[in-house]
Length: 334
Image (cartoon, rainbow, N blue to C red; front, side, top):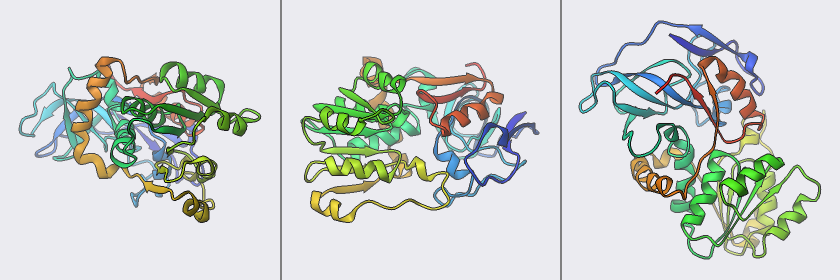
């Protein structure tokens, strides 16, 4: 069985050459659990922080031993779990970058393969989609009349945030992304009203012009610096959801925080989002979002490669912000 491991302890942003594909003994089916073949592997930005042992207290993988952390959609090849049989499909967060996964009881969710395309469970119906749904519906509680501003709008979280905001009645949605190609994805595929390229000259003025009304909701995925710029434009009593802070994942020291005086002046409601809190309602989210996918109101875009050996290069593109859409590795055919 192939799996991907670190070559050495990381001290900086990971590159493809920091990883190695190695042969390991195949795992066995655990008691009360399942053994699955990994089909759709999700690559996510937070893993960069986890590789250095800086994510939510979770340990870094041991070089040469532990697979790189990752969520995946798997097909069951052997089951010792009640109600689960060979051929069934499951999703699990702690699969890892490997070809086979031993998933203990309580570590996986059974999937309905007819509810939506199976690959969707690695992205828009997986952890990124749950994150977006939780932030928009459970924390910010977006409804009719809201004006929503989203950073990293071309990413799988940001793109889903804007679409769910529209579904819930937001009247104007503006994204921020890096580069013309990403901005085109945001407006032409995800249906935002506008997207501002922060890499272009005069982008802050363009952002102001794209917001005829002050945003009532802001969703941050990247940095406190961008959050501060959004906070200056936020409506009084606006809601700010702080989700990912990607610029901190590979930094040795955290950057300066938000301007507390500005938060007070805006009477802003600032909410931190940790998706783990919403795992108990994951199935409810999937049921709602699957209907949106079938209706064509929730669209997703993948940046996909085939083969486990292609995962390190795709991950390097991801942490460099060069991916377009959800980073997914097709480890095996469905």
